[in-house]
Length: 186
Image (cartoon, rainbow, N blue to C red; front, top):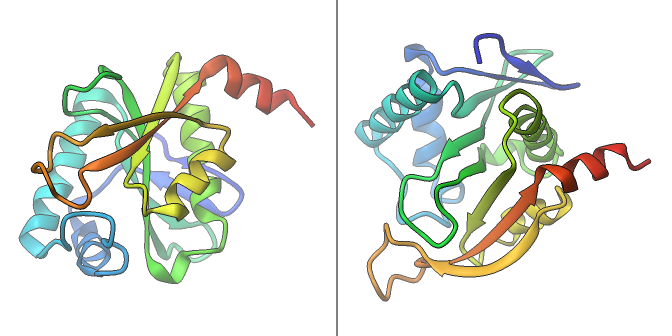
């Protein structure tokens, strides 16, 4: 993506080096990171930023920087990424989001996710998009369901050690045909 994706209230765009402060604040918040192994320090956020930029360069998409259209305020990130581990559902492209606490409950995650799905199924012509999260992350899997994704069991996340409380994950899927049917429904 060379031009940003825009929705009614939001802009999804590639990351810039000067976005590090926003990303570091987001990833340092223990509530935002409650369903991840740990909050990230600044160095961890810088590593994440470089990975997001490299993914954009290699694939043309990533978990994009998310900002409000009206004032440019940072909201978080939303977008697409190739799943970076082997599992029963890979290879696959996932949709994901992480929003600042001040932006929770305002419909931003759904609005941005709908833009990312539109991009996935039209511009990228993907057949399917997956999403996954820990079972305790009700906000996230609730959004997956509101987006029309269907639960497809679960799996053990290979990036976490056996016995880790976040190792169990729920898997959701959305096929392009199902997405298109929903888009056409009134």
